[in-house]
Amino acid sequence: MSIAFLVYPAEDKPGRRKNKSFDWTTNAGAYMVIDVLRRSGRDVKFCSPESAKEHDIVLVSLTSTFDVYNFIRAVGRKKSWRKRDFTVVVGGFGLQNVVPLRHYVDYAVFGRAENIITDLVKEGLRARKRSEYGRRDSPGEGGTAEGTLSL
Image (tube, rainbow, N blue to C red):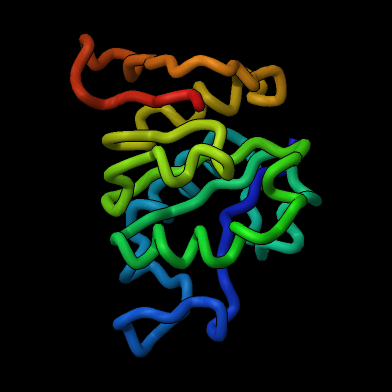
């Protein structure tokens, strides 16, 4: 199973930051998820919107509202993102409203993703594609606000 984090070329990521790279200072949560997955024996790569189809699972980090705009701008006109064979998991501090993303993502993670990402991967997300909205609480969290929303 191939897992990759989505990154954008500098010209595709307008916004307020001068540094448009995917680095640990602006994506600390994403690197925590990468670390957890690698410690569980999973290899995590990076991909572009165009090369996402080469992976089974694509993770998207949204650190602000600008990242939501950048994500929609990068994948919104790509037919390969509307009818795709790969699973998209989105999360991060910038994830406030999943409705604008519903055509481009399969799972939205609210709260600390490093607590649940290995379980999501173990479930073999390829067998997903439920059409209804559903909520799954984080394991061991006792029904807190953290969890995933399958779209």
